[in-house]
Image 1: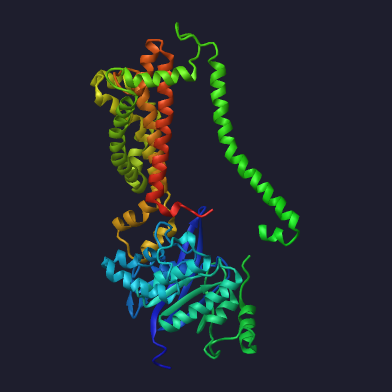
Image 2 (image 1 turned 180 degrees about the vertical axis):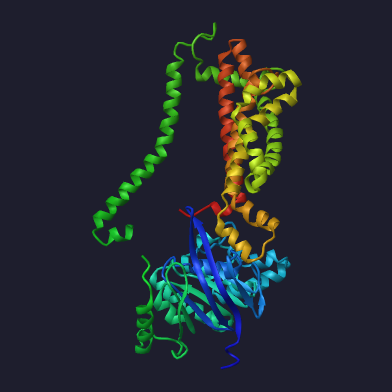
Length: 255
Length: 279
């Protein structure tokens, strides 16, 4: 238990605000949280509450106005190769094939073609896209595109994987299937996962812990430990439904 | 769609099929009709043609004869194809320059903020001047040789490529750039591996429009003083009241222009296979 609960990433007093039409609007307010090694952490919040802003800050795409981020005890500034990201809007490059998209990070890092292709192939196989290496993104279905996004993030071998509402655009059936896929991949290739969603059922199905954020600006409202729920979880299990209702009653409405 | 229909009634399906077949036949016939219509209009317009004094509109037959005669009795020792090739060579030089310098300049003022602020007003003023307005100055400075003609074509087709490349590079989607920042891309990698590939369709739009612009401008430049090229054939025809020669030149222009358009489209499909979206 103690070994399991090693802190890998800490956010300390992170705040972010923007000037919109001459008004300062806070998007993230004083968020502090710890992420444990190899846990599946779900960040849950109503739509447009500032979740993506918070993730962009962790990934180094944006700089916060205030606050610090520590990775294994040392402060990080900007993007760090130990943190990978699966984007909300897929962000696959339409001019690159599946293989070329997946190997993109290693290519930028300057790795030779043969070596990076072998690594990329391993993760293409892991997300079950073997045979589609030379397809272009527009030839794939929504679920397959998300698999490419996951493989691309994994290929750079990050210690922490951020998944920013990856299944928001998928239909319900594909979404359930992809949730199970993500758990399978997470079990096979253990990483610390920070998974962002606005879907309470998805959060309870996936998470070791749920961080519930309040509506705009994002603040930490409550932390739920879901480790008592055994995996694989059953959406109809009374215990599952109890957690679901409890979180649901505490969630702000996005208006 | 058709499967849904077949579950209703059999006659329904066959009617749908018939409708589909009728439409397919219609789409094959329509282009033929349009060409026949054009030729009959031409025949109608040329019914008063008098080849002796060259009055009226030349008939298709007279135009064809004139085109054939160009091979047996060349103008300035060159047949129709050689004149067309000379015009093509001129736009070839001009486009080679524009596709290197123009694309580089477009990237510079599309991607980098400071050069954009510095060069954009200058460039926008330059492109507002029609290329033909340069002809007097260029003729005065460089005479009427080969170089001034190429220069006019350069001036005439530079703007269209720069404008398209600039538009592409200044509207690169942030989501692609975010991928680069997560993977720690250097500024050079961001430009070469993200910004330029994502603008390739805009760059190709520039290649297409600059090609057709160059083809228009070279003919204008040749009509104003040259002894070779398709534009020269037209002005020679005008000077000697040889209307079949004028029409021959016009048709040659149309055919070469269409071939150029097809070639640039083929090149785009070869180089950007991902734009071949399934319909």
